[in-house]
Image (cartoon, rainbow, N blue to C red; front, top):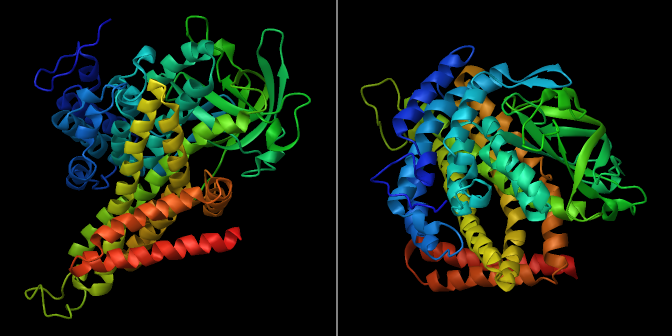
Length: 559
């Protein structure tokens, strides 16, 4: 049917984008119902979406509404400043009133393993997910042909920023599905896209990434899972995968696994790995799911983890499970990098979320906790002591967290804007622009993932330090932030793996071109600001020197 543009002043359920953005009052009612359905009422984590800071980046720094007008192949023109602002406010309400209160529920109750076919998610998670999908959030940046809204990808990234901070483990369920969707759309056959993309984009089904095995993590050359071809074009998948986030749950009617496996006679190492789509239940021709058509994706156990209790980390034993080839034989790892890069950017968002969460939580405590007097004179003369926020050491720790949150958010939004342009060029068939931006994003992705995950961990530890001994106590909620964000520096490739990817695959293989171009851009910006007075000029000059040092150290390794 013809598409009608959405006018924010005439909200109507008949309009596609408006269907996604139902009235805020409906979202709030759903929020209250979701929290009431939880096993017990938890006090909210006082998360407040930082809309002021976000709007500064969206409207003043990256001018996203103006940027959207330049996107010819996406519905960017639908997202003007008012529309984007309304979307952000609506998502902020959902995150503050629904997701944030469930964060502590997920941590304390966690997921429950019932049997090899059944894992139960934390109370309230499914209701929140149903509300999220019913309002169309999962599909806002996907093609209209598969039920999406075809809005720019950075719109979804801005919404992810809030959801990830309010409740990271809940956000993993729809987040991993996006990696699965991207992989199927990029490399799947038309038949696979038609059969699976609609349901995944609607949120009726979720997706996972199955790489790791008991004997291998980042070294995927050791993968032993087997794929035996069948006469009907399908394959029988047999093998064990571990550390599969959201590998089974009760939040969607089907789960679609992207599985790395080896075909008979495949070359050794990573050059002999293929990628397969393996559903938990084999869908009918009409897309219906019958539990009788269980596909032997057996859950051996869910892990007992340090943090992220709200998401199940599964061992999956594929026992002649039926699967279908995604892409080309023996090119599975190349195809899987579509999923991996989606997850790495998501993990960078997790680092920013940890810093933002930690900052908000410790800031509130620092304003209330009284200890000693300020070095510059009493700031609370009628009290027994001054708030600890008046002490320089505490202010430093708070400002570090704030800097990582706001600076990291800016890094992610900048990359989101690049993704928009690249995707538009891809849809227009502009291969030269796609190659240029893909190389640039490929260079920046391990930097985003490695730096922001490590910085998020450091920020969360500083949040505990602001609390002192009280930060070590669970009831103050600060230690959960540290436990949940710690995994960000480990999964999707440890920080050291990111370093190898950056230097080996992104810089050396391209004969230093990415680092040369990136440092040249830095120096051009610094040169423009170097002679300004005050702190801006001073920092521009310091950054100019650091860019030379970075480039020189890279050259030394290369030589």
